[in-house]
Length: 173
Image (cartoon, rainbow, N blue to C red; front, side, top):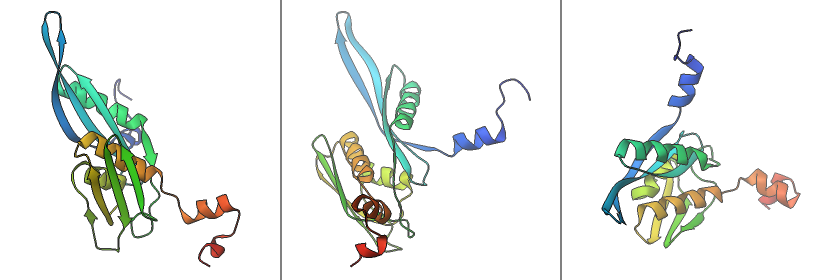
């Protein structure tokens, strides 16, 4: 194998992940000599099969900030339980800073009804049918973090049955 080349499996594993930039901001730090400019990138990373993460990267250039954001997003992945119609198992809420996000499962064919950063998080998590609403702040970073928190709080029927120590059939009764 040639130096620097990756195997087909390693390459496939990398392309598995999708990344979407939610926001790029030019930020300044006031120092003794004046103002120091840098860029902050908010990036959502997901594999559309139940794993998603939000990352933030700061660097002197946009490309560097996005790369750092992707690395940060991969460090903060959460597992999302999906139903057979690619929805969430039950309603959930999450909070991040001043932002609150409310999510409800939806019937097949509904699509992702959500706005801004929450929509990006849900799409990259692989959720196809869901209703979501952002409440409070319109800050993309806090809304994305609130959406990830809501997705992390989801539990499947089997997990709930196991925690209660009863068979799944008894949950419906």
